[in-house]
Amino acid sequence: MAAVDSSQKSMAHVLEKAKKLKLLILDVDGVLTDGRLFFDNGGTEYKCFHARDGHGIKLLRQTGVEVAVISGRSSNSVALRMKNLGIEHVYQGHENKRSAFTELLEKTGIAPEHAAHIGDDLLDLPIMMRVGLAIAVSDANFAVKERADWCTSLPGGLGAVREVCDFIMQAQGSFDKVLDIYLK
Image (cartoon, rainbow, N blue to C red):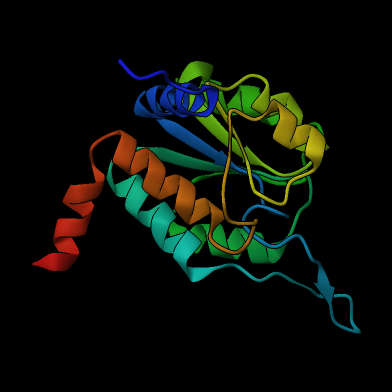
């Protein structure tokens, strides 16, 4: 039998964790967006969301995996986008994300080991250290990447969330069913 290197062992471990997921928790700035903040002269804030991330979220939700957002900042554009995606569990303005995480788990009845969190910065660590699968986007802060079970190949706001959604569906064996809808 061939020797298995540590990266293969690690990815096998990530795959096992992904099979058990019932909840995916997303940060916004730096995960659903590229982290840049745009303001017009009147102070109105604008955010740019990637369409493929949104479609991946919709597909993942169709397979029965819940999706939630916990963000340290508050933004009308986030509320509108999450409503458009059908995400019911949206927590904005929670710099201390731990309390929102606790409330979310109580509300959904999902155990922490059946949840994943995608983060990019230090504010995300309190949740990442408590979930079953901690994920960092490729351009995350080094301390976040060091503590993540897995790092995406794509950066935040540019397809990282879709990469995670596809991975979870593949791990859970639901990706082919979703794909078949488009091939028929």
